[in-house]
Image (cartoon, rainbow, N blue to C red):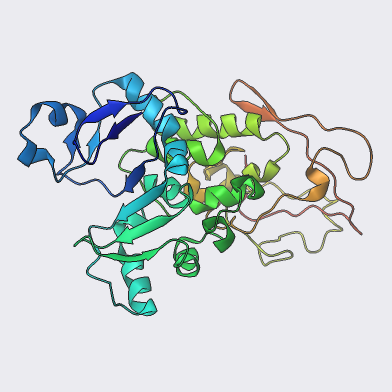
Amino acid sequence: MWLLNACSWEMKDFMSEADTPPYAILSHTWSDEEVSFRDWDSEPWPRVQNKCCIDKSSSSELSEAINSMFQWYANAAICYAYLSDVDHLANATEDEVKSALKQSRWITRGWTLQELIAPSDIVFYSKDWTAFGTRSKLSATLAEIVFIEESYLKGRPLDDASIAQRMSWASRRVTSREEDLAYCLLGIFKVNIPLIYGEKSKAFQRLQGAIIHAYPEDHSIFAWGKSVKRFSHLVTDRNQIWGTKPIEYDPSLAKLKLFSLLAESPADFMESGKIVRAPLANGYFDHSDELYSPPFSIGNATQVEFPVMPWEDYGAFHLKCPRIG
């Protein structure tokens, strides 16, 4: 881990976490005026003093940085978030701060999600480097804007949140490269996968595979897609008895795009923010002592056994437009 000495302006690499001194860390959105690690060593000081730095010349260091990023923010003594598109807010009202945050690019980026959650606290700065609040003091406002339960902005362990909930936090965020939609979530799920830029959406598929193996008891990773109410207008077998009669095949359905068991992107979890893990799903079928098998993958397929929940009656619901194939 490279740290910049704020007094001598020298860069130093700390190999061991135990030897790393207390440090501050910066969160911001990237622009055209970013300095590379190589620029820091070779360019004149006036050209680099107002820029930020990352070493992209080494693929191994880049991979280590991305896989370690969440922990770097979590271990920082303080995080400074610089919002380059927010005007002076030193004496602003709560509504003015809320309005400014809603329109900030910092709120919408994928990489800033972990930078919002991981640090012990954050000090927010406007574009003139004037502090206008901290995460702890703005937690209620931020929770409403970013659709994250306030307790997680106040330090509640991420393990308390289901996979679906954590995915929903990223559902409204974007990244410049498609692969980064997966890579920016590694720390939030405490998993690691190789970085392969150029694989596009396959990165998110690999991320879900790693999550399934890391959290075999949490089936909420499959709880994505548009939510519909029970017995909604989409149910086409109202005259059948709990789905016991076969539904007539509709040739037009063959032309519809069918989706796999896994989601295509975090956006598919936009309506999954309130999905939690059921206590009965934590290791057992119903109230019996029979352990269920953890999910595992065979090629491109995933096999999983779901726990059975007791219910007064049972039914199958057939939708007009099946979205799972």
